[in-house]
Image 1 (cartoon, rainbow, N blue to C red):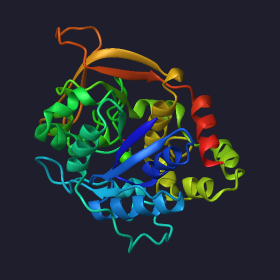
Image 2 (image 1 turned 120 degrees about the vertical axis):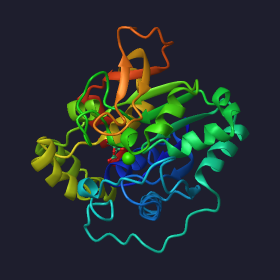
Image 3 (image 1 turned 45 degrees about the vertical axis):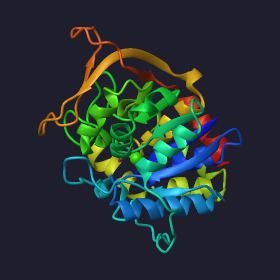
Length: 307
Ligand code: BDR
Ligand code: CA
């Protein structure tokens, strides 16, 4: 499997990146960065740190530093000021590859027609820009998996109605939803139902005793507190890693094909997915939405890749 990964690298993106980079059956053709959880330069440094740890020598390329039409909203209260749990990691001084994220997406897709699976783990800005510039890429990408939204009717994690990646750049999400790409969305609802790192799960991961396993847990330090005080989960949840699990093993997922649009007005509806599960609008289904991913399969895959 050949992947192109677009990410706003922070604590859970880092784990998803390790899952892909450490998979012997996966080639990561490029990692492109988009502003989201933290400002772009921090996302770039975080991705470069993870890439270096995994011995990845492919391109890590900076992309859009702001949403299409809005001020950037970050999630430092969830992931830390540095995005990696504020645990003192050396996250400066590394140099990204030349180029610009959206252009890199266009160039790589055109150079490898029908070959690359595109994975987005952050706001959809880079992909939207690529689509607006080069609509021909729609027919050249066989599969696009996005950690985005909150499922058929799950709760929001940044507002009552919206999930962070869509909320940051809802206009970009609309471009992507209306593009004709073969989309699969894994939402935050799947993360909180099947990817919560409970104390028992954490102990199993810690016992793997590899640098990857330790990093995966350690960078969740701020999220762990947030999960306790805000989202009231039994540990930090891992949305991007469970999206990556679906990339690597889609056979485990249950999906529903639906028509989806996105609200692009102000809060509280900003970034809410409008999922037409009963076909009220008559809109052509444009999305496979993951409605279940088994918790045990997720943690099995995670342990295999971090071990
Ligand atoms: C998504 O938002 C970010 O905080 C995470 O990295 C993930 O991509 C979850 O809503
Ligand atoms: Ca992310």
